[in-house]
Length: 335
Image 1 (cartoon, helix red, strand yellow):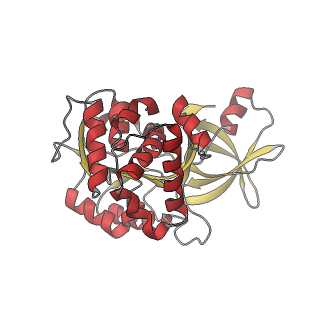
Image 2: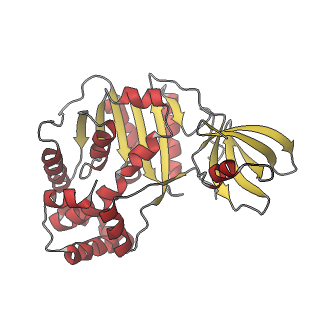
Image 3: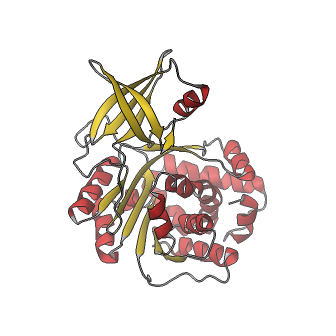
Protein backbone atom coordinates (compact mmCIF):
# COMPACT_ATOMS: atom_id res chain seq x y z
CA UNK A 1 0.00 0.00 0.00
CA UNK A 2 1.56 3.27 -1.11
CA UNK A 3 1.32 6.09 1.39
CA UNK A 4 0.24 8.50 -1.34
CA UNK A 5 -2.87 6.36 -1.99
CA UNK A 6 -3.77 6.28 1.68
CA UNK A 7 -3.28 9.91 2.72
CA UNK A 8 -6.50 11.27 1.08
CA UNK A 9 -8.53 8.65 3.00
CA UNK A 10 -7.33 9.60 6.48
CA UNK A 11 -9.87 11.11 8.89
CA UNK A 12 -7.43 13.91 9.68
CA UNK A 13 -5.71 15.67 6.80
CA UNK A 14 -2.15 16.60 7.73
CA UNK A 15 -0.88 19.94 6.48
CA UNK A 16 2.37 18.48 5.22
CA UNK A 17 4.90 15.71 5.82
CA UNK A 18 6.38 17.44 8.86
CA UNK A 19 2.94 17.61 10.45
CA UNK A 20 2.49 13.86 9.91
CA UNK A 21 5.95 13.04 11.28
CA UNK A 22 5.28 15.09 14.40
CA UNK A 23 2.07 13.13 15.03
CA UNK A 24 3.81 9.76 14.50
CA UNK A 25 6.54 10.75 16.97
CA UNK A 26 3.92 11.84 19.49
CA UNK A 27 2.16 8.52 19.05
CA UNK A 28 5.43 6.65 19.51
CA UNK A 29 5.98 8.38 22.86
CA UNK A 30 2.57 7.19 24.01
CA UNK A 31 3.51 3.63 23.06
CA UNK A 32 6.84 3.71 24.89
CA UNK A 33 6.63 6.25 27.74
CA UNK A 34 2.97 6.76 28.61
CA UNK A 35 1.61 3.23 28.38
CA UNK A 36 -0.92 3.81 31.17
CA UNK A 37 -2.73 6.14 28.74
CA UNK A 38 -1.89 4.23 25.57
CA UNK A 39 -5.53 3.89 24.50
CA UNK A 40 -6.07 7.66 24.42
CA UNK A 41 -5.06 7.81 20.75
CA UNK A 42 -8.09 5.67 19.86
CA UNK A 43 -10.34 8.66 20.62
CA UNK A 44 -8.25 11.17 18.67
CA UNK A 45 -8.76 11.47 14.90
CA UNK A 46 -5.34 13.06 14.42
CA UNK A 47 -3.39 10.33 16.24
CA UNK A 48 -5.57 7.58 14.78
CA UNK A 49 -4.74 8.96 11.33
CA UNK A 50 -1.03 9.03 12.19
CA UNK A 51 -1.28 5.42 13.37
CA UNK A 52 -3.03 4.50 10.14
CA UNK A 53 -0.48 6.26 7.92
CA UNK A 54 2.48 4.52 9.53
CA UNK A 55 1.34 1.21 11.02
CA UNK A 56 -1.31 0.24 8.48
CA UNK A 57 1.13 0.65 5.62
CA UNK A 58 4.02 -1.11 7.36
CA UNK A 59 1.95 -3.96 8.85
CA UNK A 60 0.09 -4.89 5.66
CA UNK A 61 2.99 -6.87 4.08
CA UNK A 62 3.09 -9.20 7.09
CA UNK A 63 0.05 -11.18 5.96
CA UNK A 64 1.41 -12.15 2.56
CA UNK A 65 4.79 -13.00 4.09
CA UNK A 66 3.14 -15.25 6.68
CA UNK A 67 0.91 -16.93 4.10
CA UNK A 68 4.06 -18.10 2.30
CA UNK A 69 4.78 -20.31 5.32
CA UNK A 70 1.33 -21.90 5.21
CA UNK A 71 0.05 -24.88 3.18
CA UNK A 72 -0.98 -23.50 -0.21
CA UNK A 73 -4.10 -25.67 -0.30
CA UNK A 74 -5.20 -24.06 2.98
CA UNK A 75 -4.60 -20.46 1.92
CA UNK A 76 -6.49 -21.08 -1.34
CA UNK A 77 -9.41 -22.40 0.72
CA UNK A 78 -9.33 -19.26 2.86
CA UNK A 79 -10.10 -17.05 -0.15
CA UNK A 80 -13.67 -18.36 -0.16
CA UNK A 81 -14.27 -17.94 3.58
CA UNK A 82 -15.50 -14.93 5.53
CA UNK A 83 -12.46 -13.11 6.87
CA UNK A 84 -13.35 -11.82 10.35
CA UNK A 85 -10.84 -9.14 11.28
CA UNK A 86 -11.02 -9.15 15.09
CA UNK A 87 -9.63 -5.96 16.56
CA UNK A 88 -9.54 -4.58 13.04
CA UNK A 89 -8.19 -1.14 13.90
CA UNK A 90 -8.18 0.90 10.69
CA UNK A 91 -8.70 -2.29 8.68
CA UNK A 92 -5.02 -3.09 8.16
CA UNK A 93 -5.31 -6.82 7.63
CA UNK A 94 -8.70 -6.66 5.92
CA UNK A 95 -6.95 -4.62 3.24
CA UNK A 96 -3.97 -6.99 3.27
CA UNK A 97 -6.29 -9.98 2.74
CA UNK A 98 -8.10 -8.22 -0.13
CA UNK A 99 -4.82 -7.18 -1.79
CA UNK A 100 -3.35 -10.67 -1.38
CA UNK A 101 -6.44 -12.33 -2.89
CA UNK A 102 -6.41 -9.91 -5.86
CA UNK A 103 -10.19 -10.28 -6.09
CA UNK A 104 -13.30 -9.41 -4.06
CA UNK A 105 -13.45 -11.24 -0.73
CA UNK A 106 -15.94 -11.54 2.12
CA UNK A 107 -14.78 -9.36 5.02
CA UNK A 108 -16.32 -8.62 8.40
CA UNK A 109 -14.61 -6.25 10.84
CA UNK A 110 -14.92 -6.15 14.64
CA UNK A 111 -13.46 -3.10 16.39
CA UNK A 112 -14.41 -1.47 19.70
CA UNK A 113 -13.04 2.02 18.95
CA UNK A 114 -15.60 4.22 17.17
CA UNK A 115 -12.85 6.38 15.63
CA UNK A 116 -11.02 3.33 14.29
CA UNK A 117 -14.28 1.94 12.87
CA UNK A 118 -14.91 5.23 11.09
CA UNK A 119 -11.36 5.25 9.73
CA UNK A 120 -11.59 1.65 8.53
CA UNK A 121 -14.93 2.32 6.83
CA UNK A 122 -13.60 5.40 5.02
CA UNK A 123 -10.56 3.54 3.69
CA UNK A 124 -12.48 0.44 2.56
CA UNK A 125 -15.19 2.45 0.82
CA UNK A 126 -12.58 4.67 -0.77
CA UNK A 127 -10.57 1.78 -2.19
CA UNK A 128 -13.38 -0.72 -2.91
CA UNK A 129 -16.60 1.29 -3.37
CA UNK A 130 -18.43 -1.65 -4.94
CA UNK A 131 -17.51 -4.17 -2.22
CA UNK A 132 -19.53 -4.01 0.98
CA UNK A 133 -18.26 -5.13 4.37
CA UNK A 134 -20.36 -7.93 5.87
CA UNK A 135 -22.38 -7.60 9.06
CA UNK A 136 -22.49 -11.36 9.65
CA UNK A 137 -20.35 -14.20 8.29
CA UNK A 138 -21.26 -16.31 5.27
CA UNK A 139 -20.00 -19.88 4.77
CA UNK A 140 -16.72 -20.98 6.34
CA UNK A 141 -15.29 -18.54 8.87
CA UNK A 142 -11.64 -17.48 8.94
CA UNK A 143 -11.01 -15.64 12.22
CA UNK A 144 -7.95 -13.41 12.20
CA UNK A 145 -6.13 -11.85 15.15
CA UNK A 146 -3.75 -9.12 13.99
CA UNK A 147 -1.93 -7.66 17.02
CA UNK A 148 -5.18 -7.97 18.96
CA UNK A 149 -4.87 -11.15 21.05
CA UNK A 150 -1.94 -9.61 22.93
CA UNK A 151 -4.14 -6.65 23.90
CA UNK A 152 -7.22 -8.61 24.97
CA UNK A 153 -5.41 -11.57 26.59
CA UNK A 154 -5.93 -15.32 26.24
CA UNK A 155 -9.20 -15.60 28.15
CA UNK A 156 -10.98 -12.93 26.10
CA UNK A 157 -9.55 -14.31 22.86
CA UNK A 158 -10.83 -17.79 23.69
CA UNK A 159 -14.28 -16.37 24.51
CA UNK A 160 -14.42 -14.66 21.10
CA UNK A 161 -13.40 -17.92 19.44
CA UNK A 162 -16.15 -19.83 21.23
CA UNK A 163 -18.73 -17.19 20.29
CA UNK A 164 -17.72 -16.82 16.63
CA UNK A 165 -17.15 -20.57 16.11
CA UNK A 166 -14.58 -20.23 13.29
CA UNK A 167 -13.37 -22.98 10.98
CA UNK A 168 -9.90 -21.46 10.62
CA UNK A 169 -7.82 -19.15 12.83
CA UNK A 170 -4.61 -17.21 12.25
CA UNK A 171 -2.69 -15.17 14.80
CA UNK A 172 -0.07 -12.58 13.82
CA UNK A 173 1.03 -11.08 17.11
CA UNK A 174 4.12 -9.30 18.50
CA UNK A 175 7.13 -11.59 18.78
CA UNK A 176 7.66 -10.83 22.45
CA UNK A 177 8.52 -12.96 25.45
CA UNK A 178 5.73 -11.31 27.45
CA UNK A 179 3.00 -12.45 25.06
CA UNK A 180 4.24 -16.02 24.59
CA UNK A 181 2.56 -17.53 27.71
CA UNK A 182 -0.77 -16.09 26.52
CA UNK A 183 -0.26 -17.64 23.09
CA UNK A 184 0.50 -21.02 24.69
CA UNK A 185 -2.71 -20.80 26.73
CA UNK A 186 -4.69 -20.11 23.54
CA UNK A 187 -2.85 -22.92 21.72
CA UNK A 188 -3.64 -25.44 24.43
CA UNK A 189 -7.29 -24.37 24.56
CA UNK A 190 -7.74 -24.71 20.80
CA UNK A 191 -6.03 -28.10 20.58
CA UNK A 192 -8.21 -29.41 23.43
CA UNK A 193 -11.34 -28.18 21.60
CA UNK A 194 -10.47 -30.08 18.41
CA UNK A 195 -8.45 -27.66 16.27
CA UNK A 196 -5.54 -28.93 14.19
CA UNK A 197 -2.38 -26.84 14.52
CA UNK A 198 -0.94 -25.96 11.11
CA UNK A 199 1.85 -23.62 12.20
CA UNK A 200 4.42 -23.47 13.73
CA UNK A 201 4.43 -26.72 15.72
CA UNK A 202 5.49 -30.04 14.18
CA UNK A 203 2.98 -31.82 16.45
CA UNK A 204 0.18 -30.97 18.86
CA UNK A 205 2.27 -32.20 21.80
CA UNK A 206 3.18 -29.86 24.64
CA UNK A 207 5.45 -26.99 23.65
CA UNK A 208 9.06 -27.68 24.74
CA UNK A 209 9.42 -24.00 25.70
CA UNK A 210 6.33 -23.96 27.89
CA UNK A 211 8.15 -23.80 31.22
CA UNK A 212 11.28 -21.99 30.06
CA UNK A 213 12.25 -18.76 31.79
CA UNK A 214 14.34 -17.55 28.86
CA UNK A 215 13.08 -19.12 25.60
CA UNK A 216 9.98 -18.32 23.61
CA UNK A 217 8.88 -19.34 20.14
CA UNK A 218 8.69 -16.52 17.62
CA UNK A 219 9.46 -15.94 13.97
CA UNK A 220 11.13 -13.30 11.82
CA UNK A 221 10.14 -11.95 8.45
CA UNK A 222 11.84 -9.55 6.09
CA UNK A 223 9.43 -7.48 4.02
CA UNK A 224 9.81 -4.89 1.31
CA UNK A 225 7.97 -1.65 2.00
CA UNK A 226 6.77 0.74 -0.69
CA UNK A 227 9.33 3.46 -1.45
CA UNK A 228 7.37 6.29 0.17
CA UNK A 229 6.61 4.12 3.22
CA UNK A 230 10.27 3.14 3.56
CA UNK A 231 11.26 6.79 3.35
CA UNK A 232 8.85 7.65 6.16
CA UNK A 233 10.23 4.75 8.25
CA UNK A 234 13.74 6.10 7.86
CA UNK A 235 12.68 9.63 8.85
CA UNK A 236 11.03 8.41 12.07
CA UNK A 237 13.94 5.99 12.63
CA UNK A 238 11.92 2.77 12.83
CA UNK A 239 12.95 -0.44 11.10
CA UNK A 240 9.83 -1.87 9.48
CA UNK A 241 11.56 -4.34 7.17
CA UNK A 242 12.92 -6.85 9.71
CA UNK A 243 10.03 -7.81 11.93
CA UNK A 244 9.69 -10.32 14.80
CA UNK A 245 6.30 -12.05 15.05
CA UNK A 246 4.40 -14.69 16.98
CA UNK A 247 2.44 -16.66 14.38
CA UNK A 248 0.06 -19.56 15.02
CA UNK A 249 -2.43 -21.12 12.59
CA UNK A 250 -5.27 -23.56 13.32
CA UNK A 251 -8.09 -25.24 11.42
CA UNK A 252 -10.99 -27.49 12.35
CA UNK A 253 -11.51 -28.85 8.84
CA UNK A 254 -8.06 -28.73 7.25
CA UNK A 255 -5.20 -30.98 8.31
CA UNK A 256 -1.68 -30.70 6.94
CA UNK A 257 1.45 -32.83 7.08
CA UNK A 258 3.52 -30.50 9.22
CA UNK A 259 7.29 -30.47 8.81
CA UNK A 260 9.18 -32.56 11.35
CA UNK A 261 11.38 -29.59 12.18
CA UNK A 262 11.20 -25.81 12.14
CA UNK A 263 13.87 -23.20 12.89
CA UNK A 264 13.15 -21.48 16.20
CA UNK A 265 16.40 -19.56 16.59
CA UNK A 266 19.29 -18.64 14.31
CA UNK A 267 22.45 -18.65 16.43
CA UNK A 268 25.73 -16.86 15.56
CA UNK A 269 27.45 -18.74 12.76
CA UNK A 270 31.06 -19.83 12.96
CA UNK A 271 33.78 -19.80 10.32
CA UNK A 272 32.95 -23.39 9.46
CA UNK A 273 29.27 -23.83 10.27
CA UNK A 274 25.77 -22.44 10.61
CA UNK A 275 24.24 -22.96 14.04
CA UNK A 276 20.48 -23.14 14.54
CA UNK A 277 18.00 -24.28 17.13
CA UNK A 278 15.17 -26.31 15.67
CA UNK A 279 11.90 -27.60 17.09
CA UNK A 280 12.06 -31.23 15.96
CA UNK A 281 8.85 -33.11 16.72
CA UNK A 282 8.35 -30.72 19.64
CA UNK A 283 11.85 -31.19 21.04
CA UNK A 284 14.47 -28.45 20.87
CA UNK A 285 17.62 -29.55 19.03
CA UNK A 286 20.86 -27.67 18.35
CA UNK A 287 21.73 -28.11 14.66
CA UNK A 288 25.20 -27.66 13.23
CA UNK A 289 25.37 -27.33 9.43
CA UNK A 290 28.89 -27.51 8.03
CA UNK A 291 29.72 -25.08 5.20
CA UNK A 292 32.42 -27.15 3.57
CA UNK A 293 31.40 -28.65 0.23
CA UNK A 294 28.23 -26.61 -0.17
CA UNK A 295 27.49 -24.65 -3.33
CA UNK A 296 27.23 -20.86 -3.32
CA UNK A 297 23.50 -21.20 -3.93
CA UNK A 298 23.07 -23.48 -0.92
CA UNK A 299 25.21 -21.18 1.25
CA UNK A 300 23.02 -18.26 0.17
CA UNK A 301 19.86 -20.11 1.21
CA UNK A 302 21.34 -21.05 4.56
CA UNK A 303 22.61 -17.52 5.22
CA UNK A 304 19.16 -16.02 4.59
CA UNK A 305 17.19 -18.55 6.67
CA UNK A 306 15.13 -16.99 9.46
CA UNK A 307 13.27 -18.35 12.48
CA UNK A 308 10.02 -19.89 11.26
CA UNK A 309 11.45 -21.77 8.28
CA UNK A 310 10.35 -25.38 7.76
CA UNK A 311 13.22 -27.85 7.51
CA UNK A 312 13.97 -31.29 6.16
CA UNK A 313 17.23 -32.45 7.71
CA UNK A 314 19.32 -35.59 7.58
CA UNK A 315 21.44 -36.59 10.58
CA UNK A 316 25.13 -36.62 9.78
CA UNK A 317 26.63 -37.04 13.25
CA UNK A 318 25.37 -37.01 16.82
CA UNK A 319 27.59 -34.69 18.84
CA UNK A 320 27.73 -34.21 22.60
CA UNK A 321 25.49 -31.14 22.74
CA UNK A 322 24.21 -30.85 19.17
CA UNK A 323 23.34 -32.65 15.96
CA UNK A 324 25.44 -32.20 12.85
CA UNK A 325 22.92 -32.31 10.04
CA UNK A 326 22.59 -31.88 6.31
CA UNK A 327 19.75 -29.60 5.29
CA UNK A 328 17.87 -31.19 2.40
CA UNK A 329 15.20 -28.50 2.02
CA UNK A 330 14.10 -25.15 3.47
CA UNK A 331 10.43 -24.21 3.12
CA UNK A 332 10.07 -27.05 0.59
CA UNK A 333 12.87 -25.65 -1.60
CA UNK A 334 15.47 -28.36 -2.19
CA UNK A 335 19.05 -27.32 -1.55
